[in-house]
Length: 62
Ligand code: SF4
Image 1 (cartoon, rainbow, N blue to C red):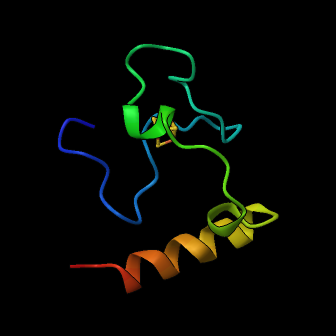
Image 2 (image 1 turned 90 degrees about the vertical axis):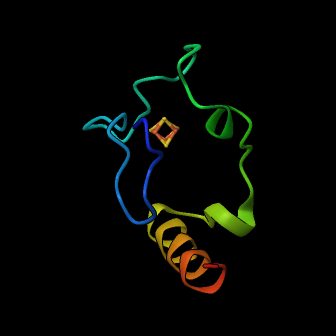
């Protein structure tokens, strides 16, 4: 995604198993490689993670 991934859009590198197709490859964006699991962001399940991301996008927009 040369222009960056817009908020709310699914990354084109997320496969049908919800896994990153670039995992372990040099092409994987640094922001992704540098991210470590954080309970405040990820929650305890996919639904919580999506809710947390929605909240962050709404409440931290410039
Ligand atoms: S880790 Fe990064 S590159 Fe991989 S699917 Fe997620 S957003 Fe896309």
